[in-house]
Length: 361
Length: 116
Image 1: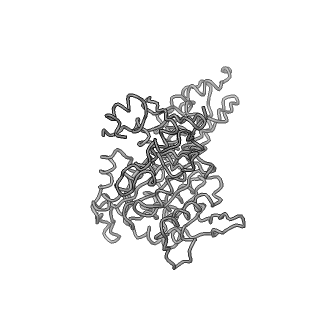
Image 2: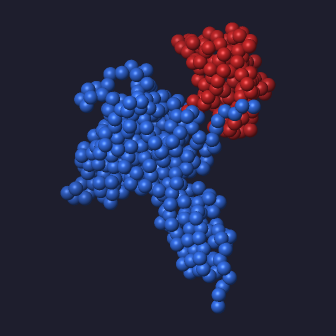
Image 3: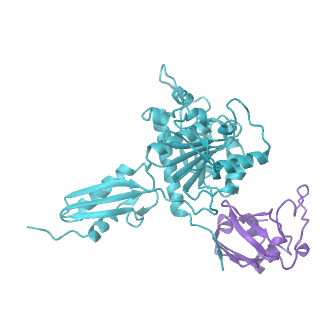
């Protein structure tokens, strides 16, 4: 007995029961289903997600498969191929960086809270998930990315006055630190910082990028203003320690970004706790949970907490972020979870924001 | 001054009619239509408003009646920038500021006799 041929409409109807948990719409309405092929009882299609770092990838694959097996009569073999294409959060207002889909700023209030460590780990784990990623170290006062991400290929100036970014761990890299010799400090007035950042943003051959992570200097200064005025920033991540004083200053940076209408993608609590390597006891040196409470009171996503772990420091000093050196270690996992939640937030922005450009009447 | 809601300061449409008129449609449904001279005379830059005292130095009546918008562009996600036909280019008009100086009758009378 042969059952009637399976139609594409039947499969799509079945898939309408699968919801994206972040975007709150079904995966058919979101246009995720691509390349459907039906041969006899075999149904194959792609589910094209908004980020390769999607934390619910496996769940969506199982749900899609089950939905078709259960609801489409005659389908016995369902092959789901998970793909991803990062959507652009908003149309850029200038020709600047038109090949970059999303710009994520990483900021903090105080220095020394691990902002660069967070930026490097986020960039590296986004890249290891398959996304095309750039990392711009805009911390003019203490550029540390050149140490944390030791390059395979160094950045180099080209004849046409542009800069070819370096590459390390699959991430395209540019640092304000490359602009001066290693041990020399940068002593710059504001206007110099402004020009230098513009050149690092616009004068670098970033190529096609899904995410450009920008590691900001601490506080609220020239570099922040230049960034938000030069390019449309998709959103910002704030890094803080759990301690009250650190958190209060972090909130100032957060409000400055809000005043320039940069969406806050979330807060990360670094140096959250210390696990004693000898007895395994958890010690909360700077208190704990302060950033989470602050995030809740300000209705901002809390992206996660990172332990105070010697491995993070050791791998940073050797030039490979812990999230790719030891992805399954507690710290590696913490960074990868934070990256997943961040990528979700960016995807949500991409569906919420509408492109705004000036039209002639 | 009452604080503005996010809907009141989020633009959903930006339209320019030649050099003479600029329109912002807001997320709360309001629409602000600005004449070129009105906007030029309310430039928020440090040459037009004293940095030390906050006193306005350049008023609408100081501006050429025929002033026009030579070019307009968005600044990041929070403001607009205009190049004026008189050569002035230093003002960055945040959306908050633009909403506060909406020239429609309802908004102007809410400003109580026009302290702007």
